[in-house]
Amino acid sequence: MRVIQNYLQTQTSYRTVSDSMYDKIGEWLTWYQNAGGPVVSEGAAESMLKYRRLGLAKKVCEDWADLLMNEGISVTAGSFDSRLNQILEENHFTVRAKRMLETSFALGTGAFTEYRDPDGNIRLDCIRGDMICPITWNGGEITECAFGSVRTVNGNDYIYLQIHRKGMPGIGENSSLYYIENKYLDAVTGETAELPTGMQEVVPTGCNMPMFQITTPNIVNTQEPDSPMGSSVYADAIDLIEGCDLIYDSYMNEYILGRKRLLVPYSAARMMQTQNEGGAMPVFDPNAAVYFTMPGEQERDLKLTEQDMNIRITEHEQGLQKCLELLSLKCGMGAGWYRLKDGRVKADRGSIADKTDLYRNLQKHRIPIKMAVRAMVKCLHFLENATDEIEVQVYFDDSVLEDPDTVVDRNIRLVQAGLRSKQTAIREIMKCSKEEAEQELALIAANPQKEVLI
Image (cartoon, rainbow, N blue to C red):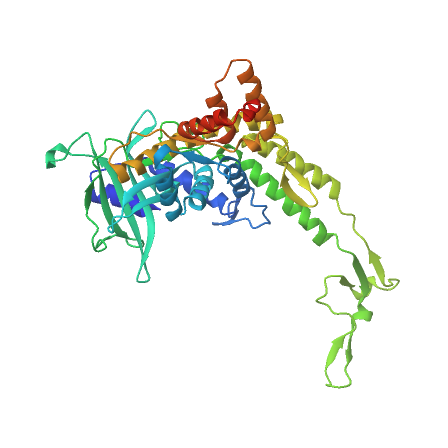
């Protein structure tokens, strides 16, 4: 949304990434919305070629979000657990974070932001890539950034703009701490609007770490290598998405053009008088696509003739399957992830551990997500307790990778071989904190019959 970029460039001294980067994000968004496609020229005018689409760009992002952030992910923070779960529930984190992750794989970048609203409640926002404007970055790490989100007030749309920046010593601020500037912009004109009652224009966080976390697919941005913004997971696979759509469109046309036809002599399609209304009606309905009349000079020996076209099902299905395999390979899922089955594109959700490419890339994409979630929890803890000194553990759902019984058996063998502590084994099996693992060990010590389990 260019409202934010225009405001930063014309009304402030802040500068953000190049316009070409946001042009790319706009292109990725178009494909994500299933509206991309080739442009054809008709004289001096250009128009988008209309054809049937499979919506594969969104499908790819949905699948990555399902694999990375499903109901099995858990976060532990010791004594802060109860309050953390309450904050996350109040902010609908599970639903909103998964949606943000999906759009971050589509647009290349996503973000969490934490703050207190005018009523003092801790708020957690999830921001999509086209509403993120980095201000300062170093080696790809964004240290100051502006974030926008759409708010509707009395039927009018506004952009709530948060600028997370370090303090400015020239106006008496601490340069080692972060401050949040709040702005409201008209979503149409970009003009500055009045802030809601109780909202301060500048809020000191009192914290030396940013109250935001950036997450991107863990791949190189080949479109803008020097940009701190990430790359869409399908940035280098748009030709394949387009190819799948073109094959699918041709496939559907086979059924339209290959329908059974009847060639009808013109004399058999002449109008005849109706008895009731005094009008006329054709013997054969000329609007019916299955009927075709032949001109009089060609109908001398013509009888009612059936014409049955052959439909090239096998050729289209083989071509589409090959294109799907290349698409899933380019998007990091390996060649066997997508299959054409029963007329639909489906994901092969077998044992992911057996799919080498998908397994490696899944582990790779988890790294920035884990870092972002850990930093987010530390910020929430700071807003609640004025300190970020807390141990945070993020556990992903490894059941999508291997059977839970396999995890238990592996830990038993490692403990028995003296290669892993019982506490570490319990933490991996139960996905719990260090304190909870110690409590479980105490219960085991009090009940010796359980010792055989580990």
